[in-house]
Picture 1 (cartoon, one colour):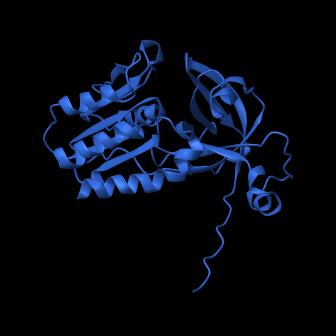
Picture 2 (cartoon, one colour; picture 1 turned 45 degrees about the vertical axis):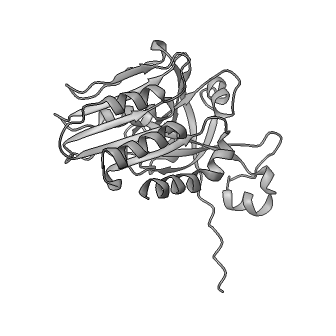
Length: 278
């Protein structure tokens, strides 16, 4: 059997923190810029994401920064840690990339970093990836998510074609976590306040109780894996929405840290899909 070729290390982009803004009590926006972003290209999809690289404390990497060299010369436990975040906006003219981070005090890795990072600091990231953008030919659109999906939903709302019929549901902790979004006239958001209830509970109820318009729907459903699983079944089985008209996946899973969830995410999603196709 032929050996599988070694996986090529991705090239890291280097950027500089231009500014930060706390847009809600628990959401910080970090805007990155710099000449190195001139050829980035992050405007094809509304769910573009990047993997922000965080150096391991106490480890110094050679310059110029090269992931291939790091993987070759450093033990795996000293490789930079990455966390995946959706691009909130990309301004090609200004070469500015905005990323929103959920911050809960000192919890986690990326959130505390976003809360303390200062303009002028260097940031490296991989990507962007992505795959969803609202289909202008759809009869209507369904957008559903928690805080982790909020940047992609906001970007999608702002890219909706004029006259689009949209049902958008975003669940956040309380009214203070609502954000200003600038969609086309006639498009609005239904904000749901969790206020101590289980994550996604209100989203599941809202979608189940929605009087679905007739015609072709293009849906985007992302967030905590538990409620996503429930809505995947509802949309695929009960509502008979074709798989190709759904962008649906668990961004995170309650009770698991980011590394643990990423290790099993693909297999988990594939298993759920198989179960719901039987």
